[in-house]
Length: 194
Image 1 (tube, rainbow, N blue to C red):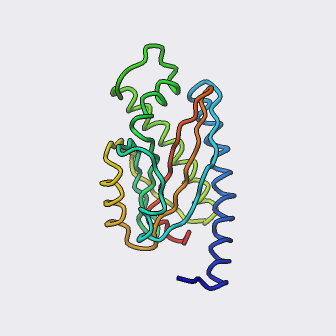
Image 2: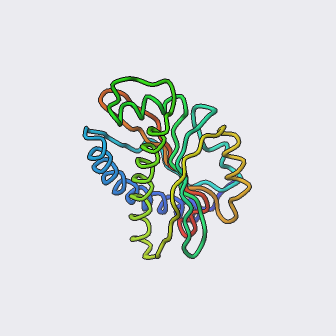
Image 3: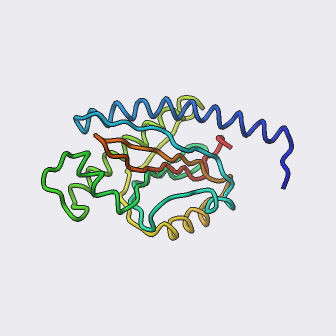
């Protein structure tokens, strides 16, 4: 498939605009998560794209079959979901590092799940705030929830529930002390981002 020059240029302009908004949000995320974790945490952007729903699976290069994620339902002039994800096999070490856990655990305890939801909520709300302010659109969001599922199952759900345009995704590098953890933000049906 060959895209017209206008379509390619529009997509490029959208991505540059989204990149600037994302970088502003990540600066705020870094400050807030560092404050909550009482240590320096650096969150940087690795990859970002807007993809049509039929290309979601091919476009995402997420490692790990099992994912833990915080999901938040959003309503405005359209409904969508905003998710913060980590590979399950990295999540325990991530939460140990964030909470400065001295006794390393072998699983996600209830307190770590609650802390993960709190961190995910901070990250998602920073993005939501920056995007809603810029688009000058009031947004309502529901209480975030903790989820653990197979990545294939999550993708199938995203593809079957996505009604409009597609998906906005970001791949993050979250550095805590000397470890880097891969994180992801997915925004289904991002409405007027497309």
